[in-house]
Image 1: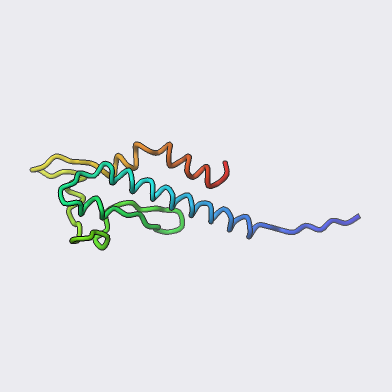
Image 2: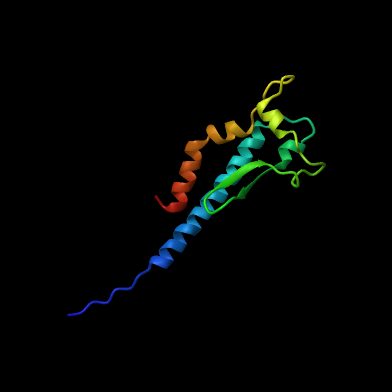
Length: 114
């Protein structure tokens, strides 16, 4: 009696990578929405500049992009988020990251089929 074994390691790793990519993209979309919900609006530039993009294999970066704003580059986001000696902070990124962690975990678990 003989047995033949075939490795599916490559297919499994590719499926895992694809699931992680989908999960990170969905988490990024969700986090952008939550950040925009928390963003104070004066002109709308800051709110509309918030994007997500991949950094490396498993890191999703959420924040304002200079090129995403429809009117002019947004270089003041850190002052809104953290405040200055003249203005109070109005956090929009930190709450989006911290307050919805269980949602983000659920998204990734769903993509991974867990």
